[in-house]
Length: 75
Image (cartoon, rainbow, N blue to C red; front, side, top):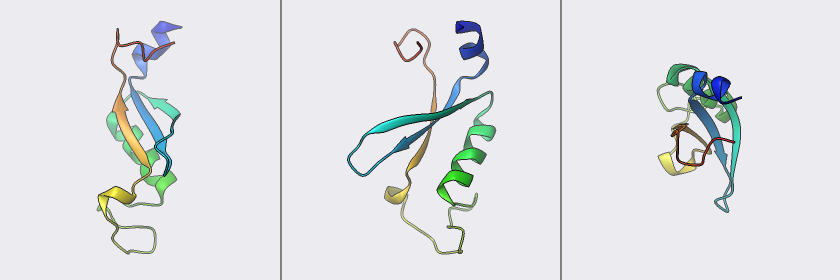
């Protein structure tokens, strides 16, 4: 099990308005995780929304994090 986690160190995390966090998925590269976060959040790579409107960084709900081995993040 830990072998698969090592191969997928990049996580997409959804954070709601109350600060609750949910792991959405794990990916092999940061680029894959970023692409998924943009698709889920309706954002383009330039930071604009699907309709082209720009939003502030505080409005983002999907975060990219690297799994830290030995931190207790893995199960």
